[in-house]
Image 1 (tube, rainbow, N blue to C red):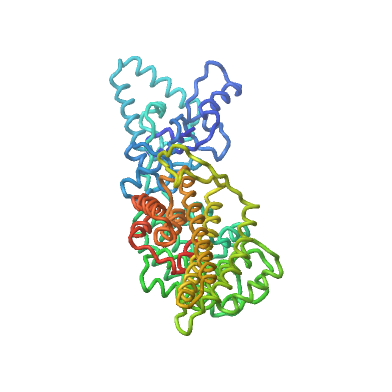
Image 2 (image 1 turned 120 degrees about the vertical axis):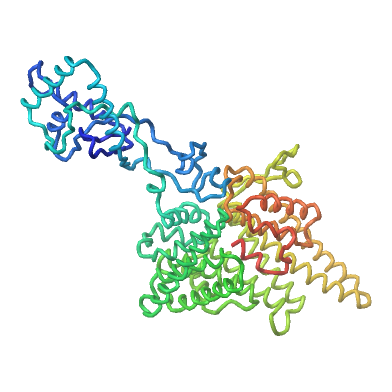
Length: 582
């Protein structure tokens, strides 16, 4: 319901609308009039009843102006059909404009009604002057009598020239102020987008925990706004938002540098959180050399902060989550540079395992670290590579630990296998699809499957190398058959993991958000599919299916990273695949 608070004179009238269910003020005035003891023949004006109201209540008329619109400001302005999607409706996304947001249905709106009131009062006066003189004199006499009998709450200078009751505003609904004056700032929209769209689906466990633990108020706003604007720029294909985010990025770097001047401040949770959040900006920004160098610098800085914080950081849930997030970034950085994991990260994770047991996340990190160290030794940046027999031994040991993670995940988050006789729009690979508890659960399963594909690839290559060695020797039939069986088993394992990953595609297609899938969620499919598309262990039909889904994602602006994925996939030997999905 809308409330119109309007004075009895035409000089200054403002409209206030409040979305609430309440009795109209005119009805309150009427009820109050019946409760006041006064002669039946006495006639009072509205402003005199206003004087009987409690102090502080505006002296006014109130009218119903209709239900408030829940459409975004841009669609309201052109009377367009808004689907009310957040943070950006489909109409604004289709037009390529920045959605200005939605009005607060519980807010109080002030609307200037001075001009409309003057126009209506003038029209009333004209109608009065054009009527017969006798009735006019009668009304004027009655008005004068009332003025002499009762004191008006208005000063004489504020009364209209003709003491005629101002007409109700019911017959002329107020016009709202331009939407831009009611819209939240871009920084507020970016912050809301970060916590409502990115945080629930992020792989950074510390992002959700810090919101629950109430650390948000102590964080510098720039460390949240900078990556949020970069995400919005990617989602909405608006480069100007990225430029705006770079200014906040510079401010955040200065604030972090100031925090590092004191060792006590550097040990605080907010300092490491700021480094983690600002590193998101470089990971989201275009893949330029400068962004890659900045991201590596932030990762190295986070490692030094972990060393400075010591064992005390494991005493809190947020501290353990931040250690896990830093470890994931370290694994990615080490995979790109093909260097071993720093000792401090390995020591802290081993200590975390001793204190808190076999947590699935801790186990996954331990296996990822073992895989990374093996990948570095298979193809080192410098030095001698590991022999094929040693590769087989280490790969099988990691495979056993990975199988334990599959078992643990199946106990906490199982899935249903569905068979489809007739393929439809969301045609499943080999007519098989999976049903998961949530998109996040499907992502966790695919991460383990990708790790299994990497292990199978290393076992396959090592067995093939030994197979060729045995072929060059005489009477090597036993060795040939054994290593050939190992390579065939590895190929079958990789093929099974490939089929399971492709079986998650129909599940994602059935999600309500598939048509407006975000870049973050699309990345959960882009990297596994690009791995399959570039794997020599994947069947030809699987590579074709993966490329077709990547092309489908590339048609959406949310799938920006998928545009080049079908033709520029990373080779399976590149361990960057593994950590881009974690």
